[in-house]
Image (cartoon, rainbow, N blue to C red; front, side):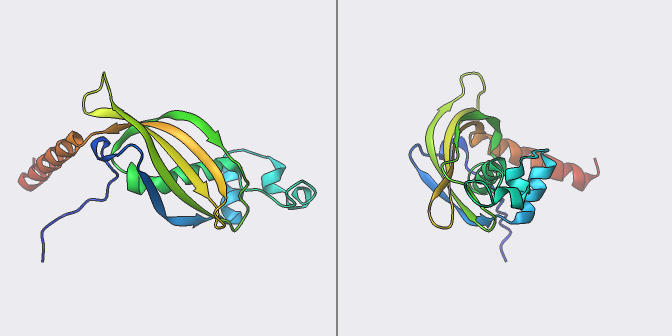
Length: 176
């Protein structure tokens, strides 16, 4: 048996390659309950998300999934592969669009392309990455696109975590 420990994490800044596209799995099928709960929790009382009878009279003929749920899920689908434990924080979005709607029962699939990255001038060991996230439904139709910037750690942060964790383990073992 091996004593090797492998921690799940995203990519460090220095592991990200400009122009590379990452396909995220699995996809996420959106239910009516997801949409209703998200819409209610965020106080978005738009009838287009909540009222089936009224929505049936509108151009799409049925309720739409709240676009903010679609955006949050699109970004969320990328986390385990790209930013889990390796991000300092989200800096913002420079573009968000929803070229087609999502409906109850649709499955969202995501991919991300690294558009740009640079080392921070004021924060050693960190840098800014520009991600382009794209979400497609089960038919391959683009339903969401977001360009965002995030502050990311480089791999030097890994040794800081390892050193800190080792120190914590030593303290625990000695009772300090």
